[in-house]
Length: 244
Image 1 (cartoon, helix red, strand yellow):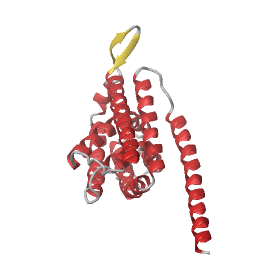
Image 2 (image 1 turned 120 degrees about the horizontal axis):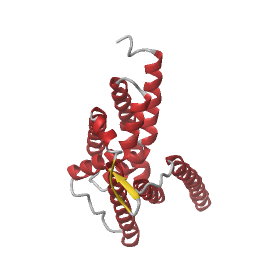
Image 3 (image 1 turned 180 degrees about the vertical axis):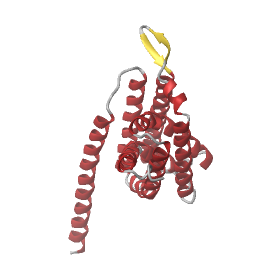
Image 4 (image 1 turned 30 degrees about the vertical axis):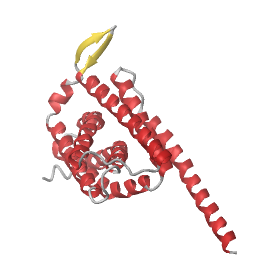
């Protein structure tokens, strides 16, 4: 117990927790978009279940790390390009995310054109299952990184639990922020589209650092926040002008 509370392990816990939170941003955005199609009464339960099941799947990957590390071994090659189990998972996840993002963008544009009622997701179970599948893809590399950063599996599991707990606190706020602002929702879908492209490229052996994607998204979000503030001020001025 004393060994687990050493400075080295506590530093690893803090670092891994921050890593899990940063790498979980795309997961939170995906959860916000996916649960936004459910009934309002079902959305909180779907978010909690989705994140809880995602936490369990990450821990399961961690406990099966020898199998996960084996996924990096080449299985076959096509035109000189070797493919491993990890590559195939990233390719499948990236293609799924691309298809899902394009479908959601099409639905969002359709809603703006027709202003009809939103089409609900099939069920909470369907939403949770999709969250779990994508989380496995998102967390594959972070689990491999965690093994290289910490020596004790207890520290890695604690980091995952703390990170998911923090994500649960902010998931609802992020979801409401995205759902209440159509332009931000389109930005979030574009972000998922970029992540899908990145996963496909990574699966094909063309690694794109996530930092580039996060920087582009952060800059775009900053511009959108400024636009939202500008629109709010214009509305306030217009209302004041009409009142006077």
